[in-house]
Amino acid sequence: MTPEAPVPSRPLRRDAVENRDRLLAAANQVFDEQGLDASVAEVARVAGVGMGTLYRRFPTKDALIDALVHQILDITIEMATQAATEPDGTGLERFLELSSAYQAQHPGCLPRLWNTDHAMVRKARRRIADLLAEAQHHGRIRPDLTNTDLTLVMFSIRAIVATTRMHAPDAWRRHLDLLIAGMRPGPGELGHPPLSQADLDRILTRA
Amino acid sequence: MTPEAPVPSRPLRRDAVENRDRLLAAANQVFDEQGLDASVAEVARVAGVGMGTLYRRFPTKDALIDALVHQILDITIEMATQAATEPDGTGLERFLELSSAYQAQHPGCLPRLWNTDHAMVRKARRRIADLLAEAQHHGRIRPDLTNTDLTLVMFSIRAIVATTRMHAPDAWRRHLDLLIAGMRPGPGELGHPPLSQADLDRILTRA
DNA sequence: CGACAAACGGAGCAATCACTCCGGTTATTT
DNA sequence: AAATAACCGGAGTGATTGCTCCGTTTGTCG
Image (cartoon, rainbow over all chains, first blue to last red; front, side):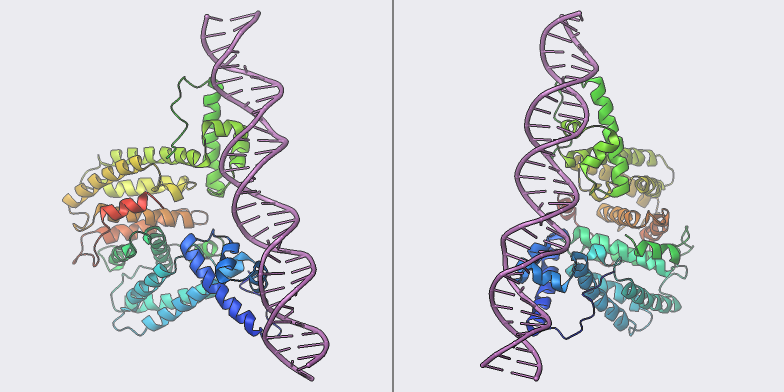
């Protein structure tokens, strides 16, 4: 786990912080366009800095990606917080729409979204659990749906976004319609048991 | 498009066909265990043959993967055909369960399943469309569901299988329950329009 | 201003990978 | 059995990648 450079003993120099911002912006652009397999040299080129500068700020390629994921999770958590203010238990649906739309515009590091920075993922999942409880309390979502089910729902949306965004950037909306229709209260229960929290933790911490 | 070696002018020698089978089996095993990024050298090592033998039979790594995908699609189409004999329009659900279970045991080339060998993919999707029509005719599936929706459903299952199979090999069953619940006839229609066939074709032919 | 720690760029390194080449071997055919 | 065409193994090639090293430049502070 190397979320970023170690704790700085002194504040960064002015040119250093500017180059760091440039690197993050360039990484977002390059990974969005070419995927995570894009080379770090390309990121440095787009940022207009040398390799040494990149690696002094982010000791490894993974650390750079982690920083981007951190940004996305930060905004995702913010979206969940804001969605909690929606009335009548509609917050969960609102959140799924907001976060999916955001992901569709930042597809670069989608493959790592829920498999990195576990502390923030836990925080996000806690907020989502609250949204789920509220929605179930209002009878909008079936009572047997669990928080692990919702994580699989977000895996599912992530995959649809990643697969379709180039040629049909809104296709995920239809798929989300379908998923939410399945989440509504229905005649019976879902036929199979949900994923246990322990199993999901193992999946999230190494995939 | 290089599905395999060019048309053989003469039948293969006995040792050649055996080595070809060994290579396919080894490729399945290696890609299942290590993913598609595994090296071809590793495949040759497990198969017990040299690199030259591998490349004479499969002119490129992609051709080798295509051959594996071809096998999977072959069995998938067979499953769809067999599911069509199920009564009362339950064939679609049966097919989704069968094909998902099969994919869970051959996860190696899942990333390429629906993006390679377009002729067979079209054939498979045609069979699935028949299953959908039959299910809708019996009132088991909502009338506004389209064949493109089903393709997204299979993308979704593919992603869940790929993500969870290591630590929870049956997690996809719960997710499929949820998807099918959403596919059942409901009060209203899905809120957004389905993916057009043309857009889906573009997605399938380059992703 | 002057000095120094910090930051800079980019050539170079080691590892990996898909793929080729070729001298020796073997199945097949007459 | 002898001829031959097909087949075999695996060292070698060229390209790419993540990452390091180091001589030079620059922001910061007394």
